[in-house]
Length: 339
Ligand SMILES: Cc1cc2nc3c(=O)[nH]c(=O)nc-3n(C[C@H](O)[C@H](O)[C@H](O)COP(=O)(O)O)c2cc1C
Image (cartoon, rainbow, N blue to C red; front, side, top):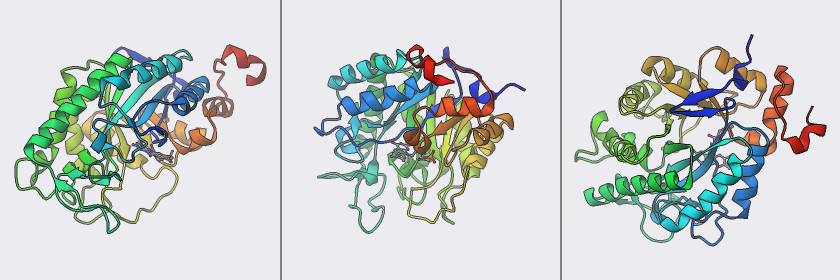
């Protein structure tokens, strides 16, 4: 039996050496509050490349300053950001990993000075700022900002672009009827709530030919919110638009109780993969190699996204290879200690 976790995965001319993906994780480490790559990012991402992760997705990176979750977020809203990312991309690729970037706008979940924007003027919770309802001009500017971000990501040499459409950030806020109460063409029906994402995908497609992933929150965990069934429809639309893979997360559009357990989001990935006929990534409390292999063997996802486990063990691919009885190449400097 072939161990799937270590089989390559090809998409639009990009081949990942294995199915292990470093899930995007905010590091809040742009200490000058200018969105730039710093030494922390260089060390953090490169060490997972040395650890033989197949694809590294750089944390939520803001397409506008107002779209940051915090002042210390990475940003890609200016041409001045390209150089730092170009260097980071080079460092990661030197060790045989592919690298993607998650383009993001925080919407009403931005914790920043000044005005924050969202589809509707509804605060996330009682501690959050009330956002301003976006005008159509602001929607247009935001779509353009995603496009510019993609252009810059391309210049920096990224292999993959992932759109952050999950966890209650801006694009997710438009998709969910819980956070989108608009009465114009950007609110109401599913088509209307999807409109901004449709426009962002189309805009990116004009400047980006490479693999495009979208992260979604496939369950709002609320009786009036979205369910995996709703996301089958959205995923079909994304597929028609040329999105290559849906990275299936859940929750965080409104405060809700979530019953978490190992692999608790995997069934959403499975549903979307089979019902919409599109490749998916599974994420969320996946920690053991055997668990990851089960997901792939049973065709419940195409890629395995790991977040916290890769914080604990940057060499997790080595750990997994040993456990699954596969020999993987070591960085030559580590050969004497790898087996
Ligand atoms: C420190 C940290 C930062 C995170 N930042 C992001 C982010 O920038 N974008 C995103 O989509 N998810 C983010 N997440 C969520 C993870 O990508 C992942 O979906 C979640 O942690 C569940 O996976 P795990 O159980 O393997 O940690 C973050 C998680 C952590 C722990």
